Amino acid sequence: MQLKETRILLTGASGGLGQALARQLAAGGAALLLTGRDSRRLEAIALPAGSEVVRFSADLDDPAGLGALVEAARDFRVNLLINNAGIGCFGLFAQQPWPDIGQVLKTNLESPVRLTQALLPWLLTQPQAAIVNIGSTFGSLPFPGFAAYSTAKAGLRGFSQALRRELADSPVRVLHLAPRAIDTPINSPAVIALNRELGNRADTPEEVAQQIVRALERGVRERHIGFPERLFAWLNGVAPGLIDGALAGKLPIIKKHAARP
Image (cartoon, rainbow, N blue to C red):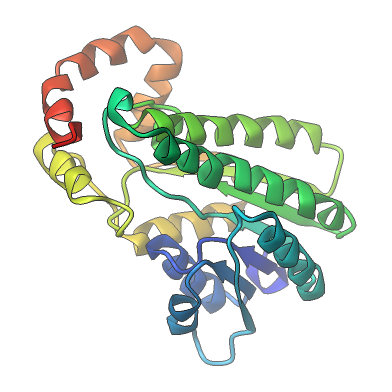
């Protein structure tokens, strides 16, 4: 899709990646309906002069907030939905309180699925439309210490693939783009320390936003962003036992950072 022809609903716009995406999409000529929980951070997003933008504060985990956002999206004549909102959850699964696990599953999986279903009838009336789900490498390369997060992101990837195949005869395209670690506030101090000790690279939000915009313009249906993580995700699909063995050697380091005090 050409950005100048898109009217985009971007969730999680007040986060690090969301802000970078908003700036690059606006620079490409897209009209933006930006949503997030923090109205002050939404208002603080600086966009190019002349950008067409509406800022709409909403909690997508709240059915009322989600419904109001869908109405706003129709009024804005959205033809592209980017499900970007998400939260992290690092820790040993046996030690994590269920409310924390449940919130990750709701925010990262249930809410984008519900929003997509609610907005889909409108998108199907458009001459061309798209749904972009922002996943994670951990959806294809499940990682110790991130059991709940990996579960949610794997579910989002499966949802994206199933919906893409279901809508193959419609004007709506479905894309799934999975970055590796991103240097944003979603990373707790423990995650930052873990990545440092393991030597994992974190991309800047601007780098990831650029890759997402490029994939959108080219109509890429599915992509893992970052190497060698892309290779490891593929390898996990064809020979998961090799990944099991490789991660077993890193487990003491992961447990050291994931364990609650």
